[in-house]
Image 1 (tube, helix red, strand yellow):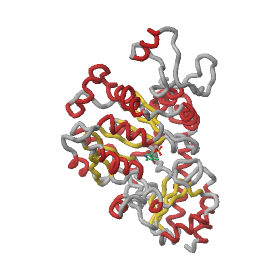
Image 2: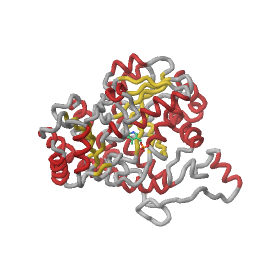
Image 3: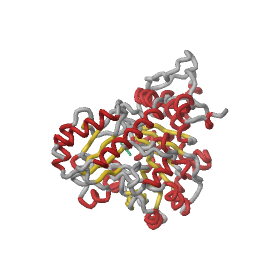
Image 4: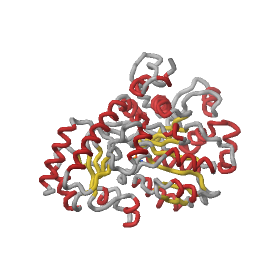
Length: 418
Ligand SMILES: *Cc1c(COP(=O)(O)O)cnc(C)c1O
């Protein structure tokens, strides 16, 4: 039986994984070493120039990172994976590997605030222009493509809009024009969705969220799905790498130049925490999703909820896309509009179990008021595009007993006078 035939609950534990060669340790050892020694000058040279496999210096690679990368790569079905210090480091590195001054990228509007700021503010200073389009409007992506376009970026579930773009349809548009599709799979993870199967070329994650799961380390990863033919005019800067590395041109350029030069590397200790966290990913996602469904159903019936956004609800405009794309699970993120900002703050302050935290994908249930926190740099127009109003709360539902979560929210809404 090939490991590809195994189910995800088994694969997160056994895929791309062997006990450590020397001692048989079943957990990945933390190679907390900056550099790696060689017997001879020639031996070091061979590894340095890539004639031999091996490690030189941990900014360029480390065995603990390799273990984590192999596992993520297996789950996403890629040909190569490169871990990074954070989700933002992963996204920045992908863009810098594909686009330069004078180039353009296209992005859905309903994306993570940090990514929005990177595209809108930081990259524009370096001559990379982002064209933002309505995340679910497939035609808008098509219209925004021109000769300068180097990638299309989309998230699987926008947050806090909680909208679900049809990735397969967007991939078709991208490929009609030979443009790379980059999918941020942070909030769905390979348990709900493998972007490669819908046509994505590159997958990125903030592994700080569900992959780690326990809120104890920042990290990111880039997976090359191996589907894109890099030897083409649009990516002329990769010509040399295409000649040398064929289908691995992008991965080689990313690892051997961009990530090395930027220094976006993950620490071995964080890779260890990610690897341990990942072992329970499938189990956690099932619980996150079933709990979130119940909390959303509870909120939907509550008179104080002006609007409940959760793709698992029949009423959600993207319910059908979500169902088809994510196989009946709909994630852990819920956005709910109460009467006012005052009601939101009152509810948050009264919560006892649900924590007020700027994070998502933790095993604990978290709540945040986006308008006063991660969306505060946005102007009114941008907030509308991202579905952020002053009366909006966003929950990331954890894996506690769901009755305790609902009880906590119910009491808090009561205290807030909702
Ligand atoms: C958190 C997040 C990021 C950024 O990741 P960091 O690890 O915080 O740098 C990117 N995309 C999405 C969807 C996220 O939720």
